[in-house]
Length: 615
Ligand SMILES: [Zn+2]
Ligand SMILES: [Zn+2]
Image (tube, rainbow, N blue to C red; front, side, top):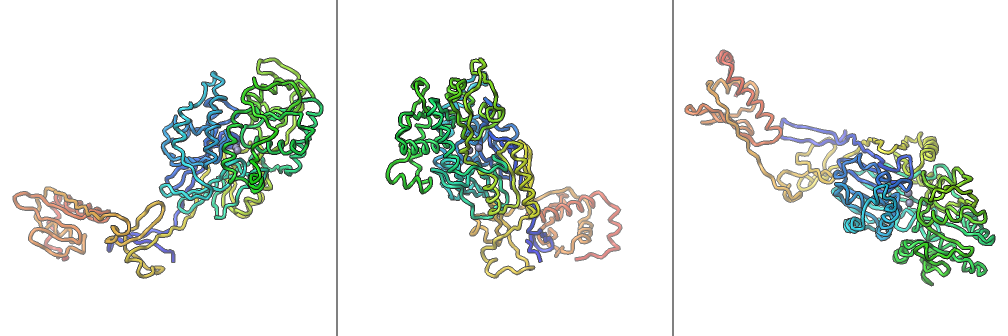
């Protein structure tokens, strides 16, 4: 027999089953069939959680924001930010200072440390073009934002009004995490960007050890598989060294933090081993890359064993062969060299300036190492391989520079994603963070692999709602004197069901103070109605309706919980009095209805003599 709860006194029993349908909604406000401006909503049980709050690198100004208009910012309880990349975090200061959002914001310690640098840089880069309305926020807004953020460690469990969440190391970049959110026993894992492959300094993403019902996973690389690390490092070094030996310049457009440090570790180590290369300078043209080194040194304990062992001997991020420069004016372009400059997709700034300067010469190389989003020059170079290039001043020039694409992108590929799903075995998979064609091919593969197991796969567009239904088993904890004897299947308990933070507790009415800190109050309702009919007529009609009119006192009839005061001859008013609760209110309503009918219906008096009282 299905367990059930019984509510209410005596004849007013009300039962409901412990099982019910629960609807969970998932809505991308960004990263739906695109890469850029990651921002997704989870709505369940009256709670709303936002994952990530990024900006699209391919757009400017408000165009780069997620679709914030589609949501009431004030209704969002939590914002969980997975990592510091622009497409996941750049809109956080905007959302916290320019909307009605009042919830809490969580991220890891290294993510916050580096976000401060990224946000400042975002202001500088996006503020360049006044035609797009300048930057989305100010340094003052950043400071206000930083003060509101709560930092957490990996695996630290946090509970906010019944919503539990914690995070795991996601690989990808320093501080990156994936969040598990648990509401009323249902768990959703949002991976953000993750990589299951260890690299030169980061660990591979962890495998959560708990059952997950909904997996929201990035699909950046669709069904592609990555080149093995050794092979890609070899190709990268060959491209760099061969260009230098031909007297050319090597441009490495990268976002200043993340993959940049991985490439600097690789180059510095290679230069150490090859003294003949020391005549070629390696320049990191980024103030932000220099400033983030302090955070990298602080959080070495969150990196892999290799880098921690190196750190026992000397700090691996104190590079011997890398020169930092903060402005183009410091850079003397007078010999073959390697220059790392941001942004990674050649949209504007130093990397674009150098590309414009070097693109006409065939002995130069540009090595693109990261993922490139639509609407950027780097993406155009890879997809269209154009013969000419329009400089930032509008002049068109022949495009001779050699373009290499060697991915160091720390995102999961198809093999990693499949293995991750095989181990995790979720009931539902929602794909985000992938261009439409990549996502479609991944979805097709996943459907053919998992559909027969009943696993649903979704790939929503931005603002499209994925609705999932859960048949949830509810468990109520019995406490106090009701718990002295073990509840029996099919038996019933009489008590009060308390619902707090999605947990049910059953407690005796008298023990609510001790077990729930609640005080019991009684609300007495009293109603007066003008009444001019003979009193016995009303008594007769009530006795037809109720069995339990238990006796007659001098001034009232007594139901178990309802008093009816006889009208005093001088006043001609009848009074009802009862302890208010949903059941008693219902009975009082029906008594009132009888009173009103009798008050207006004299012919009923004729039945008085032919029917006995039922006392
Ligand atoms: Zn990322
Ligand atoms: Zn991303």
